[in-house]
Image 1 (cartoon, rainbow, N blue to C red):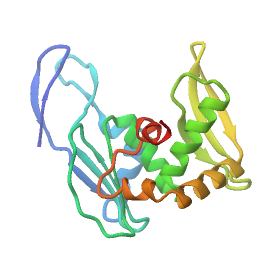
Image 2 (cartoon, rainbow, N blue to C red):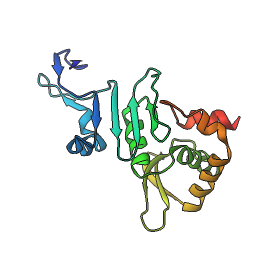
Image 3 (cartoon, rainbow, N blue to C red):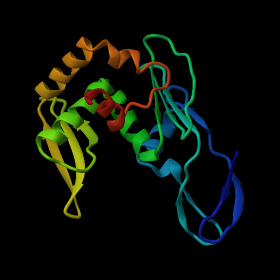
Length: 191
């Protein structure tokens, strides 16, 4: 149960929302998680739509990953072939699940974002959107001039970043357990 207080009208209620979703046993929840509606609640008293933020874990045992939404550092021991990540915001969870669900190396994707932002002088965050199933190009979204724009990055850039990750053992060493692998994490290696 999640205790909810509406920020608009102070209405209080308890919500029956699972703190962990295993998409093998609850595949019907994957779509609402990925479109964000799982995290939205409409206050029955005033009708306000509120983005819920609560400790939550998304587990895909078939693709061998777990993403934990939590503002606090969490210790967890995982099998060597199981990727564990911690994120702080709902949008980060959705992006991380898209990356891992596409069976991409999230460290390499973060490196692609870092290199692309610097090469193209983009001063806003890039968000992974999808990988083209034909040519392997990665598509990222970003905000510029009040608009949402899309940017396609060649598959070769991703492959090069995978090579850098493979040749740099510190990346894997510092991404065990439930690591917070994001732009700041990648930036810490580049200084």
